[in-house]
Length: 156
Image 1 (tube, rainbow, N blue to C red):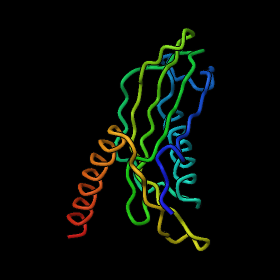
Image 2 (image 1 turned 90 degrees about the vertical axis):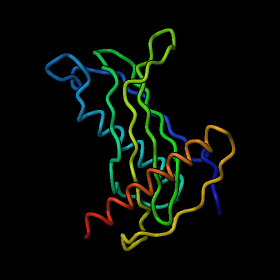
Image 3 (image 1 turned 90 degrees about the horizontal axis):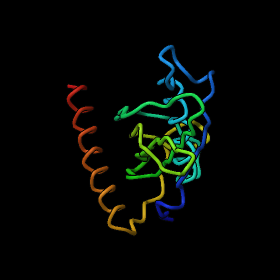
Image 4 (image 1 turned 60 degrees about the vertical axis):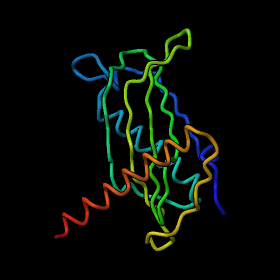
């Protein structure tokens, strides 16, 4: 059964505390990467109905900083699916007290669905409903083909 992108949409909210701050008084990048991985896993589990593993972090682009007491919003969505893999985009925002959001990070992760023996298993197809979703799908398809070509060249 195919699923819609909205079926696996996930949000996570954090308030930055001193435990999440580095020596420059900014959000520690490793902490953000952990949160991104968790959000991507939840998205992929919701889409596939399976346990998943992170196969690749395709892109992780830091665009801004988070500071102590900032509200951090992570939004994840499936952008492309292959046979056993799902590309998940996670965007991270600082949300002001007025509700205004400023993106500070965008990441693409490849998640693989696993069966009960931890072997890759087929995932549902993806129903694309809007123009933006179509653009996400087409861009994801190009990234998928690029990753495949890299794997072929690495194995030569």
